[in-house]
Image 1 (cartoon, helix red, strand yellow):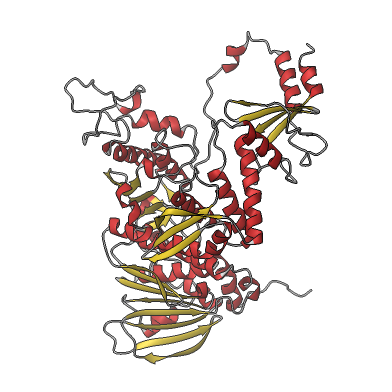
Image 2: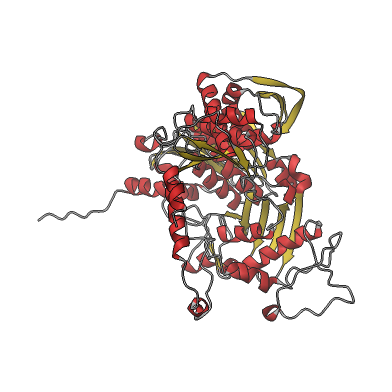
Length: 623
């Protein structure tokens, strides 16, 4: 019988490896720019054509490569960053696997110009699908110039799964922002189709943050600066009043490398507890410096997931550092430790839970580490190392606490009866709810409208009902490409970051359909001249920013963009809880709701109304 196992050709093996490293044009930008940083570049220029589909070009002024190094760099596992396995535990460079260039050359057409400072001539190498087509001396500046053309030209199945040019560009901007925020000492530029998106000179960290997110948020940044034997923490966090509904500007960096770390993120968010509304997210730019031997960056191909030897200790320090920063800015109560009448504070391990005084201003003597063990370990008992909620430890023999309590069967039976009356499962309510809009009604707790129908009792959530009605109206306007507008007496000005501008340009046509009129004033400033009618209760600037942030998460399909715009606007302008409605407003709302084809659920799946039948109500009072 013939043998069936064989070795794959290098070209095929490289294409398979490219599936992990090169997922989309943003992957190429990330790998090439990181290589430039490792080469000691002080100025890096990135040029994109058609969202990276046609071309990605990265030019740097680094140390360049010799002719031999330039050719060898395209081989798999060829690297100058490590020589032994032990080097993996003390990494100080961005890349080290030696897979990036080999993977890129396997699925694209690559052209490289490179020269070292001491060489008179540089080297030109042209590759296509892992095959070298040309290599010769050439005159070129010091550094490296990579041009990656026609991504996935030889893998049509993968090329067709690329998203729109705007979507791919948005992903490039996301990765680009992560890199430039980690290296403010390096100058960066990013251009798309000859239009400059970012032009960031070498600067301080705060100036770099302003260059990325815009100067509008500069006044809301609070500095972090804590140094311990385990970790050094620097960066900035946002003030509580500057929170947003989505965590758009949340960044963690370790040793100059961006990372995703839900566990550490929980430390920051927990420090804002009781300071920000539920559902709001603070902005933060947290930079960690640790011993390279205490982390492992070789756990994921994109190197954004990093393992730490002492995660719990660092969690505590991050949490305390953020609370200290907020305390010094007088946003949370602090303890004045230098007062003569201040009681002695026990050591961390035995310290009882204490509640601090509330001074009128912050104090530089605030010490967040004094109550670190009590506060953070209590929280850690509910959070796993991956940021998920875990069960808290129960006391021993807890069953004896309830040994004398007999279960109340009647309570359980009544609960079952009422649960049966809440008919959530039938999406077609035409045979269940027979609404008489002239029937009497009353508002309960400023939230529910309670009224009888011909088969029982109806409970309607007024806010969700209005969301449903408005959503259907906005979706119809988007479909018909028309919407009523109302002009603003004084146009509102909104300042957007480059990333937000890209999203606005993608959805601006759809915004016009629902009633927005937005003008570009230049320099990232836009004027809101008209807004959709009947949104008097909404702040136009805040509403537009929410629309941009929501659309940024769903820019792949046009229908999804319409859904995001309609739902975000509906939630922003719907009747809030607690608002007392007139009889006419209730009648109109109920009438509009039950004229819809499927009124039972909101667009995001929450229940709008519940129905209790007469038979179930009567059964409740039989006992």
